[in-house]
Amino acid sequence: MRLMNEKITLRHIKAGDVDNYTHWTTVETEWMDWDAPWEKSPEDIERYLNWVKSLVNKEPCDRKLVIETTDGVHIGDVSTYFVDGDEEKLAIGIGIPPLSARRKGYAYAALNLFMEYLFKTRDVLYTQTWSGNVRMIALAEKIGFKEVRRLKDLREVNGEKYDGLTFAITKTEFWG
Image 1 (cartoon, rainbow, N blue to C red):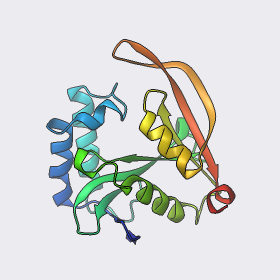
Image 2 (cartoon, rainbow, N blue to C red):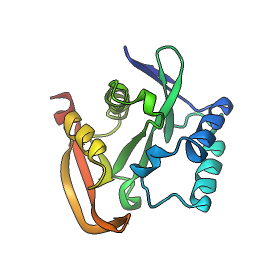
Image 3 (cartoon, one colour):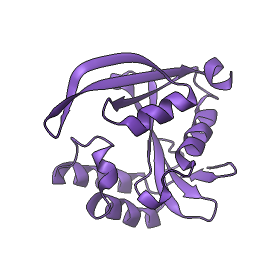
Image 4 (cartoon, rainbow, N blue to C red):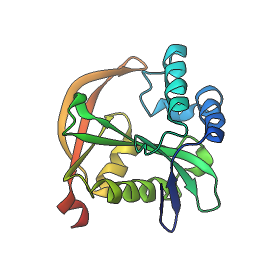
């Protein structure tokens, strides 16, 4: 599968991508301060890398799609999961680890493209983050997500408490 727009391509993960994920979880790790910073233990990283490896050449797999720039540079991924395991509540996530790839509109372009694809079979999409992830909150709101649930003091990061946030958007709101 390949989804494309004027800024990015979304595609299935391949073996050559695993080296980037390894680099991003062991060397260029700043992104982990924003994307679930409570999941940074060596065991969490090993579990994540094993999961990424398990997705290689597994088609169709829209659980995780690689984000590439128009010149073919792998800069991150979009992914899906279910809110609290509820298969009626599909949530999407995004990660762009390289600092050099941020603030260029790639995240907005990737999420929009991914949502266009997912709204072919879904009426509502969700995304979740924590109240300290101001970048993801801003991106979700820019796309049109609305906060639908807040769990007070769900996470602790660097000794500070943060709320768990769930956002939703309907197909009608998205295409509005």
